[in-house]
Amino acid sequence: MTIHKVLEEAVAAQQAGKYSDSVRLYGIVLSEQPSNAVANYNLGVLSVEIGSLPTALTLFRNAIDSNRGEKQYWVSYIDALLKDGQLEKADCAAKEALENGISVT
Image: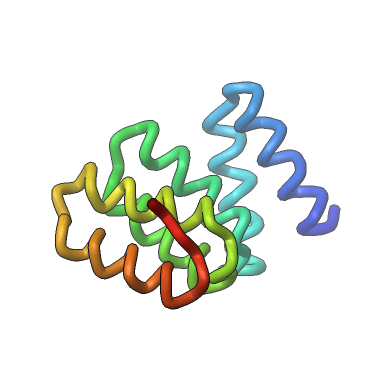
């Protein structure tokens, strides 16, 4: 099975609420492609949902580093920073997003 197919299955599992399956499948993708922006982002979303903000922050940052032009990655990253009480980092991230042509306000 190709990584693209595994990623599709991970997204479908996540949308169906089969979180343990989606986590396992995203893990397969990331073991082969650690910088895969979609897998990092979606696993970050799951991490927020289960209350693991430190993990989510790392995953969102990985997604951003792989694709600086995706607004939703920035928005989710900044939101997670705010939820984690990291106001200064959130402000810095918003400025960084703006420097990359992304308005998050």
